[in-house]
Image (cartoon, rainbow, N blue to C red; front, side, top):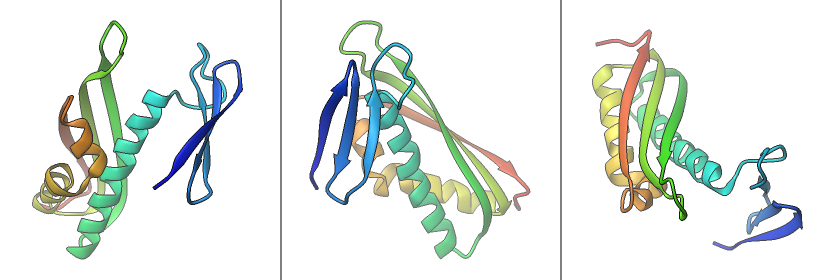
Length: 136
């Protein structure tokens, strides 16, 4: 895997991936043109675990109709402003059993999500699951 960033102006950078995609990062005070690098890490965590949970629930033939994963992170007060705690909330919709959802989230956290596995070496990651229209 290969990636690079190119400085554009002020505190704005274009990030490029080997697969041809790009993301604008904006570390300026307003963050007007894109996420900060740390926001992107948090979004990557949400995306990574979402991919796992959807994949696992589909394999279990659960009727998932929606999934939103939101993250709240606390950061150190002084540089480097690393994450000190991350709380994930999984909003699961559809006819999904609570057991299947809990198993999928646990498998993502403990086995499959590369971003989570990297981050947990430095930060505590907690999660809760909220259900809408789920089955027992």
